[in-house]
Length: 264
Image (cartoon, rainbow, N blue to C red; front, top):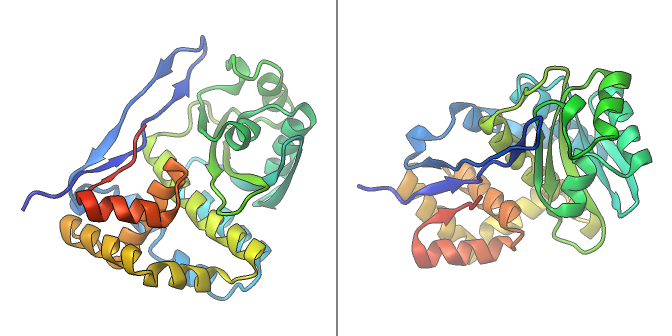
């Protein structure tokens, strides 16, 4: 049986000199899904289950990020309103130091990911033309050369947020790291939105999963692509994150077309 295509987001990356490259990753069956993507989140639900507070959940997610993205030296989650950002979870002081520089300058990959609603991946901060002040300063003061920052789409109005990866190596992050980070962003969105609405992470996830249309979309993806329930749910969340649309709207598209497309 021919599987419905699952198209993952394209890549926008700037190398020194500002040249951009764009690619789209397409996987036709579950067998071709990145093994690391599936493995990285197989136990995330159980990792989060004992942690009832949002701060604890976000710290679990950042620790998982460093394990899931091998060349990430540290990870953090930023949140705030325009011009007033803060780091709400971080694996160590290095991430906090890099973030402080961004907040002081109101410039950098993390700030832009939140403000411009996009994914930012650097090749070498020392010569990235997008951040001529932040990049060299961050590299000189902290030793960080690469960053990968993904907007966290919150299902409430007000604050913006992003999950951020940092590495001392130039050009450290690749396409699969971007996919992993995108899925981590969806889990972060659930935790942050749950806190704002006064719900627990797992309670919100169960509520979403039991919605009739969402459940139907999960079933379609499971059948067409040989996924288990959690994998199908996570793919719906990735699409919701990337398209900045409600989960139920993405479910309706899957029901109508049988496909889940995540455009570049």
